[in-house]
Image (tube, rainbow, N blue to C red; front, top):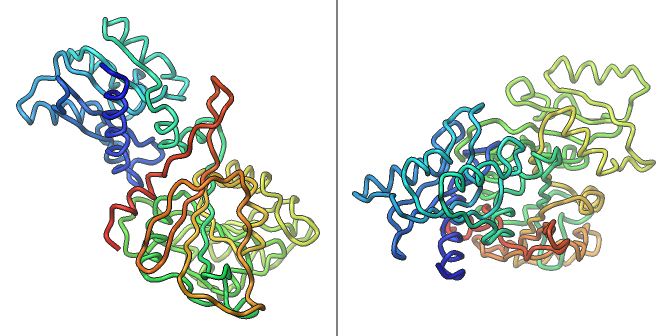
Length: 389
């Protein structure tokens, strides 16, 4: 089949897989499209954690339509699994039993239990396999999962700024910059993340709840405050709700027997110490991600930083979302947004209500060529663009 046709159906599968965002984690988003004679005869995606995988969903859809998958081509965004030590049966044998003639794969599964073994099983059964079609897009679809397998973190930064680049009111006063549609989208991103991270400045000025609201919630994201001098008030909303919603504080008062730390723990806050804060209280970003990953067990992080914290973490961010208002602040005392480095590349801009949202991504590297893949819009941005504001 022509390469352009393979890319067409593989991209259809990638878009379909995005429908699982926020429901399948820590699993990757995956979809399968079954095609015969240039026509889709069945398709499906992994819709929820612990539920059917993409391939059996597509096979079931094919049969419900009155079609047979025998002799068809299966377009799968991720290598079909072949291992058995998991919640659901392996998918490669299902494709073999169904009699598909060809399988086109976006990228190999980085899981050592699968990596290449699914392809080998299919080929041993006489099925033609083509791998690496739209590989960059397929890998970017599951970047948080890829980084998790590699024992790494996936970090998203998000902020709102005025038309003249300000992130708060005069003197740093809290000011609503983005509109209600943008706020609803932020709540969706919070719900899809493992953890929501802020600095102590934001905690003191805004006193946020930092919870996803009015969105489907499969789990409660951990709330994390980077608080070098351990100043988070016991009366704050974060502390007051810590026994109902997981909350953690990272500080550098490591050598002191802090009564405040004990009072936070008594109220349900997990208190962790890091010796990687600098003189000005800025946490060294790489060390922070390592601590959060190893001690708190979370990898997909959604950070809502002020400009100082953003400046520290832009060097390690995988993705940045910037909401831009049409309104200017027109005040020289208002704090300005951090400057996004050239290493973070725009992957798309959409309208969200009266605001403009631009996504920036750090390009992933093709290991075979040591060159960056062209960046593509994340599932979150694609889903947001298809949702009416």
